[in-house]
Length: 581
Image (cartoon, rainbow, N blue to C red; front, side, top):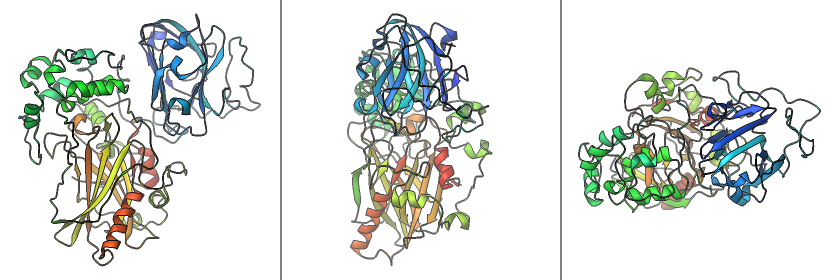
């Protein structure tokens, strides 16, 4: 049960204890009104509803809405989004909304929704229609009927079979008493002063041309998203291009990026996509075709305008003396993850007001503010971390077991929660030192922000000798040092594999805007992790090939969902050791 609308904590949270709210409706101060056990939403070409679902619903086959409308036929009035699927409700189901209570069912598999990562149930009423609907329940079930083991409160007269009320009550654990409690799915709630959801409408226009302006893409581009500052602080040619093989100035010339037009027009939002050159328009159209949120699109415009069509080499921070001829990949994630859209990107706070910075750098600054966890801050890990045979990270990398749920990560080799490819190299420096070099490529049509991303794998042991020696290579930033993430890192010696350790890294960017913290479509990033060389164990070509194959097969990438910072995963594997840049 996601919502039973029994007068509990909506707006604010749902029956899972996750965030839920709405805005821009004509009743209930914009959030709709709950009465007699149902939520009434009145709309006039405006309104959004969102309810987070932070756990897998893999045992369910359908999303069921017990709903009625004022006139009937309202299934064509609004867009439903769940698990990466998004369309008019009428295109996602054969059921219709009538004036009496009935169940409208959406077959998750048929519409391409990912039950392992439902993300949220969202409604968007900016489709030109007016009217009203009432919702009694929202639930994921294994069939077409609402679940029979979840209580509901008084329901208006209905022909729906009265099977919702069980003999015993469900324990009252769904709604946290305050914002610091942990909901039933174990995902921590926020201790960061986040602003409200992105102001609606958060949908890109249906007709985007070269004359479309930044303000037309998203009217709230400046407040709260600081887009003019993101452009003006990092204009091509005004930032050192140290470490970049193809500078922003060269890209601006190649793509006809009009720097003067940006300076003159971005602050009032009149800057057009044509003034940004050849690249911005097709990329924005691509994002619109994939229902990418408008607030995230305008945040990424400074980089989309300088993004090449071809895949760029992510480069290296430490130029290697030698690269092994034995490599692994590129290989697509074997669990075949579906489309992955992070539908809420934090604000980029271009000031240094403490609360704003705390939102922007919510992963990087977590050890400073989060006193619910004990954080290490050293390249030298405690012995009970390095030598812990019971850390569930070992089963995660060797057997693909998700430590949060005990279930499979879904594949026999490289796995991820978003479409991507990976490849592995070993770089030698001075003969006695190696860099484990992991390349990730975004193979979808939408960007991913990398903040909070966790990467785990099985690699050559270094006895945690110098975990601070690591680097993140992202060619889509004005200079190599900008947006460079610090990292939470652990190495845990694997008890069953001689010479191998389980590794985990979480990215923690700071200061620079999100367009420098992003993995763009068809583009690559790379991570380097320094390790003392073990020349005896991997002396032959076959042994070296086995090593890189093992690294790739054990690799898992977990991008952040629902702004969670991947807190639950870092708790499970004790990934709470921050190392400096």
